[in-house]
Amino acid sequence: MPVLDPNPRNGQKKMLLVFGSFFAIFVIIGIIATIASP
Image (cartoon, rainbow, N blue to C red):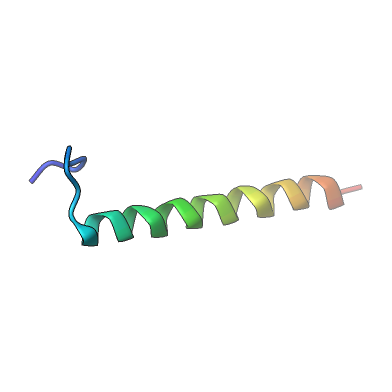
């Protein structure tokens, strides 16, 4: 099964959404840490 399906099923789309939100939270934490650091 290919990692990126041209027509993703609902489960794969949900998993991609979870990974995307996790990456977004990681980036936001990094930006906050950069701003908060002296």
